View 1 (tube, rainbow, N blue to C red):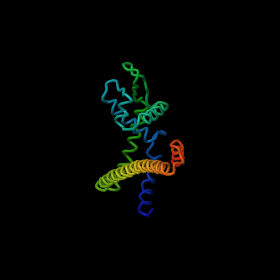
View 2: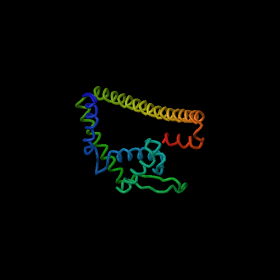
View 3: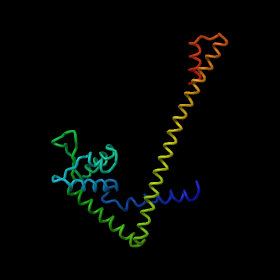
View 4: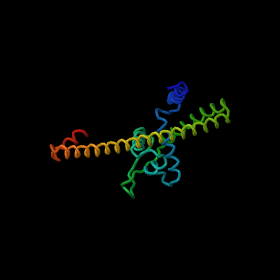
Length: 197
């Protein structure tokens, strides 16, 4: 791996060190973010209750992952989960007063940090950085997709090659058997199977 690629990895990895600085009351960034999504969805409803399926649809996170985070938030007292009285197959979620307080606190902290960074770097530079990061993400996503597609194609080709080899092996075996007249078809089949395995 050349130096530039190592620099990219180092640059991305160092943001993990900021994790403790943007968390509030022991809440992870993921929990704070999911609380924000839940709060926005709840503001659209009079009862402020949100279906878990709506949270999944809004975040794009698989249902098991959302449920795991919500379970943790419930244990922290940040939200409550109840069965939907009109459809007990679904679960409703609502942010508690404590959860809303912690969410607002976290947002104030994040706002202060980002405000300081933007003032130091300049708005134009930050906008340019965001554009570059978006482009970097898109290019990385596309590169991974192409790589995965290539791997899938390679697997299919390998399977096709294996199938072809098996067919050729079987044909050769039959030809040999016919020419020599010393093997029965059942013996040929067993022999071919052993070679394939």
